[in-house]
Length: 296
Image 1 (cartoon, rainbow, N blue to C red):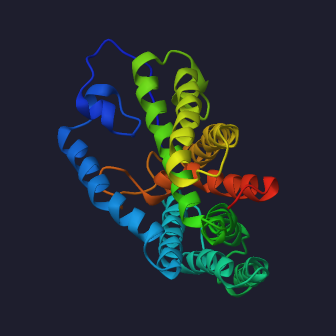
Image 2 (cartoon, rainbow, N blue to C red):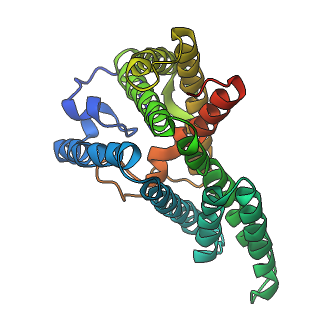
């Protein structure tokens, strides 16, 4: 997730410009910047290799592992806020939901249904006061993370799916970076002050514009059979829908009085912080491509 702040009279440091966290400009320590850059330098080539060169099974394993980590972060946020969860059972249900996308056309529905049976039945056998909260947090994890992230596997399975995955990630993260930079430089008008006070209209506009531009540039490399119009519309879709995903995660974190979902990724926060926009953008691109029948 990328957050922006309105411009202030304090000078901006390299740290404030390069980090995606919602800090005020002078509050980002330089070591955190190098952490962020080092993480990007190490993980971006690995990610590109996993998506474009490794066997599909390696990508599927990565999606399942990332989904499990994000689910653990989500449930831990609820626990730290004093809410009851099913813990490892909720994580396992989320992983099962994602895994169902690998198996067959009916796999996702079967996996989700079986996982729902389990998590909704567990409270029957729990000791203490009867409560639906543990099961409901698990169902949230299954749908918000498991079901939505599972579409990354669907996207990968489409013709030229590896390139479509890189297209979605590239356009999304380019737009997020532009939103943060523009919000810091010229941001004045709050976008959704009740949900995410530091997000600005200017940053949101920059995210849409850069998402479209990035999509047009990526078209020539990844999906040359798309027309310029098809690529620009895809960028527009990702620029708008990704911000909805970002704000949806902000609602969860703000309601739980949490700033970051975790610290698993050095300099970037938690796994869920990096997935929030993609959780909405990946399904959006799947249905954009399939409904318009523009895959290779």
